[in-house]
Amino acid sequence: QLQFVESGGGLVQPGGSLRLSCAASGFTLDYSTIAWFRQAPGKEREGVSCISSRGATMYYADSVKGRFTISRDNAKNTVYLQMDSLKPEDAAVYYCAKRLRSYYCSRNPAEYGYWGQGTQVTVSS
Image 1: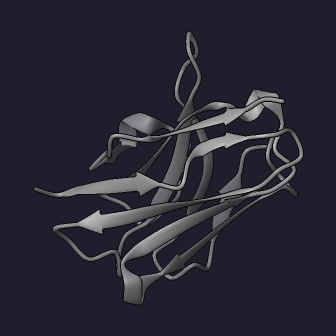
Image 2: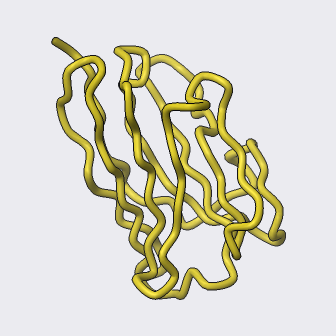
């Protein structure tokens, strides 16, 4: 089955850090553009960050710029999201997904597939 497995979420205090991992299962990430999305209760799924197949281009949501860093290790078939200076409003289920039919980053979740089960991030004191 082709999908991602997200991990690394948990409970952290405001100002803390987490590193999320997104491991591909059943396919190679080498030529894939990958994005992280998040969804909080009652809210739409929003794009957090995206990295192109060679890491040459990427985007960050305005709300996470300067605090989150996306990276990839194709040898490990994994994409990471380093999250620093976490805020309560960052709490959500975080998902990664593969851009379909294009190598360009998009903020539209409908243009992605191979969704995993997500990993829960809770930011609370």
